[in-house]
Length: 574
Image (tube, rainbow, N blue to C red):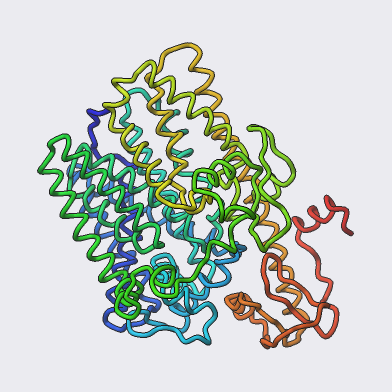
């Protein structure tokens, strides 16, 4: 595979087009903010048009004989993916804590209140203004572009799906050219790569770690492709990914730099100096655009006002966000201890203040009710990569040992080995490598080892490889089933409750309790409400929300949706 040829194909074309759409969304929004023009209805169609123009130029360059038919086909697929992503996202509520607390609020402020983050900061009266003002805002800005077009705040989550599909297409385009992989195994591996548990668990939310997981896979593929070829489209893809990723969250800056530096080192050691400088210049320009233009807020503003790019996490009077969110006993342990405890424990979402539970070690391949029930959480702290990941982790070590004994010389020469080592290094660069959402790239390591293990021919290795594939698939399937069921059920429950509020004809008294973005649910359903402090214990709770409601009379008993009736029957509730 070290002699891979990187010719364009349909998978790559779709992945390139989707990443281009997201990148252009960032640039269009950034130029608007720089000109002090608030986001409005026209931003989304303008971005779509620019994406189609880019797609036409791409098709013209690489499919000269069939450029029109390829352009029509790829454009139709791109538009279908984008609009289906919007439709699916609009149909589900964000059930995550951080999503409802400040990510949605940022989308609301930019998309509804026309806040321009380049020239002003939100006042303290805005809920969670500290994080909204000073955290990277790529995800929220892009979501606000869609929100201004659809006027449905949940539709902005479409970028989760768009980037997940883009990552699948790009890794499939790369693996398709692997000489030892059949077409079926190529698709299977591509799905396993793209359906990263972090991305999958957050696909219905406004949390940004899932987008980072997909972007890091796109960046990994771009680096792998650039190792073989520095075509203009791969360099452009690489640039778009850098611009997007750096503005997702602070840790993405560290990961992106590690990826870039490793690729440059690899090219330098292989004496590919022309390609080295092409990658270097592209990375430098993209980073400049990412930090100075797209990331003016927060990077430039944080530096000018607080003398630290990473304010408020670093600098004078830093805010500690880890101690109170860590499981009991974790703050005193080192990164390796925390990682091993998390990996070999039952899946759970515990912290010092949340409940009395502590991480509980388990035998790999075993699970209990807590494992299954906690799979519904979008950001599990303990064993966040799934109920079978501890076994997958051990099998990966077995395959690596087998490679060392049987293919040592080839293993150390393969650039895939280098990328796997780089991924491991990037994971343990972080003190909090135990929390899956902070290191989503760890998921790619077993998959790269499986690709390397395709060269092993010993009979005893085949069952090990097959078992690893089965566990990877079962791990994803278990999470997918629980996540889908939870989001369908809770969305139905929220809609049912909102319909009750509307049918009551009252002005609903509500205390949002730091989930003030939930007000959009009332306005989008045409429900009059009044925000008041509620201290009474006899209140109604919105599902998966801190918001509480005080009604002056019982809510109407409307016909319940079928899924709620089935769920109640299973729980024994009449």
